[in-house]
Amino acid sequence: MSEEISVIIRSSDPEWLEKALKQYSTKTPFVFEDDSHIGLDAKDLRSAVTLIKAAKGKGDMKWKQIAAFLSSLGITSAGIWIVAAAIADPEPTTKLGLLITGGLVLAVTGSLGTLSSLGVKFSVFARTPFGHSFEIRPQ
Figure (spheres, rainbow, N blue to C red):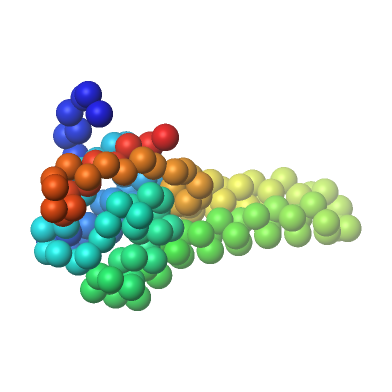
């Protein structure tokens, strides 16, 4: 906690969830300020998944915003399925390269950031005594 964190995300920002998830996916430390008093605490900010759950449960997140985030996970699943189907297909190998390449492009470009954000844990520290501002760092 010795270096100063330059990224501050406030819950009053309409796109605070997207900005926070981007910080999680890039493993960038940031400060979260609950200035609109949604009710998030340090336990809600430990990972991207817990933040999404808390945003829906405590915040005023719309399903559209959460669906947009989770759709990239679906794109990755489709890419993985295409690669698996291409390998399992008994057809000649003329289509194999095209299907594997297409599946890999879907998997990589669709949600590389999303998958990394789901598996990364972060340490959370309260910056104010009232618990409305938090410092989040990747572990």
